[in-house]
Amino acid sequence: MNRDEALVLIKDVLTSAVPGADASVLSPDENFRDSLEMDSLDFLNFIEALGERTGLPLPETDYPALNTLHGCADYIASRTSGQ
Amino acid sequence: MADFTMPSLGSDMDEGTLVEWLVSPGDTVTKGDVVAVVETAKSTIEVECFDSGTVSALLVTPGTTVPVGTRMAVIGPAVEPRATAGAKQPAAPATGLRAAPGRTVVPGGDAVSTPLVRHLAERKGVDLSSVHGSGKGGRITRSDVEHAPVEGPHRVKASPLARRLAQEAGVDLSTLRGTGRDGTIRADDVRATTEGHPARTGERHEPVRPSPATPEPLHPARSAIAALMARANREIPHYYLSTKVDLAVAMSWMRDRNASVPVAERLVPAALLLKSVALAARQVPELNGYWREEAFFPASAVRLGVAVSLRGGGLVAPALTDADTMPLPELMATLKDLVSRARGGRLRASETADPTLTVTNLGDQGVEAVFGVIYPPQVALVGLGRVIEQPVAVDGMLTVHPTVTATLSADHRASDGATGARFLTAIDRLLQRPEEL
Image (tube, one colour):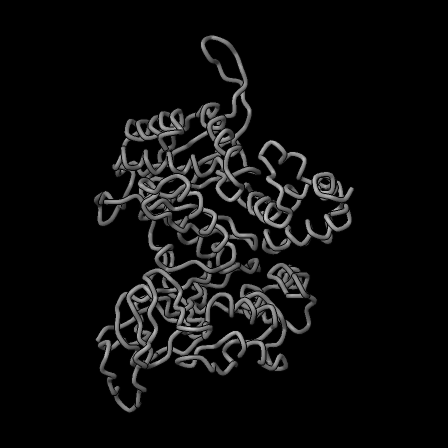
């Protein structure tokens, strides 16, 4: 998966995991956990759905890298086939 | 012959609006089946029936607001259809509805009127009350919704809360632009329009005397909270205790556990905290129960209320049943499900029935400590702050550990500070042995 594909997927996952979230208004480096007021359960829902869609294990220690659209896209692109 | 009445879905509810019947006359229902959707001032709730039998009459039409206790339907004996006065009721089909208690009614095949169908209807902007159901017992199926005309008086896509707010404020939904998914009008869009404008009088009770100042329009959830909390502060002599709990052991145990399991089985700190509160409530039963008629009635089980803040504003506190005996992974799964359905507006009546003790957890973005107001008729409320890194003294050395401040607001009529202190100490002790939770 390349970065652009990853971004589309992330936004899709965010929208489905967080009811009422509007991923289209997020800026790439913004911490969406804060701006979407996600609590730990919301974030876990997001990670769970992201893991299902990408097949990545997404360990808890990597959560800090997954707070922003850019961070997430880099992470997924570097760990799946495309770069 | 039994009556299905408007249930009390929490001590602050005195009336409810029937949104939708999920059964029709002639349907066979089993105790625990979800038969109706009811909207309270705070939430939309799926209501189960308490009897088994055949629905012989529906007495209330959707959209009607009735007081708690009002007869809404008559449930007759299971097999023999009963002719009610004037109305001819069709016999229940032999392959009538059957569902496990606590489950949504799912008739055979795909003839469903489940949250899935309602969700689809909402997405498509189809008003379910205008759809003819082709399923068993007139149930609305997925294909009914798919083929329903989108044109019509209700084709504007809006959330149920937005519809209600718009109706109260006298706003025409078709004049608004929705910011939700596919242009769905959200509650916030309605609020943005009505801000600053006094609402059209939607109150059923006229104010006793006119107020000289123009009041802000009150969200129905706000007024329900206002009434209950005012009563709590007026009637309950609260006392407050607070203690800081070192979570180093608990968090490290949780991290290790989470590292070895798939995402779906991972825990969040809230699950550990809630489990320890539930166990502490069992150890200190003086705080788990109700104050009624000048006496304390301890509860036989722990139904832990979890205050969930809703995105549109307001809060609900559904209960985790048997939270003290439920294994931690199950508690976590139940919590996830409960919170997401509370926010999606699809709680079950059995989940909103009065908790025996409530926890308010302001969570990740919250504050260090929260001192809450007790939900009557309960006698205590536990407040959990955010888990934060704080300096603590360990073996005479200063170090930094994750900590949480646990507080207790308790009813002084039912208990004293010493009891409360025992309770908070129990929580601390339990959290030092997370593997036993």
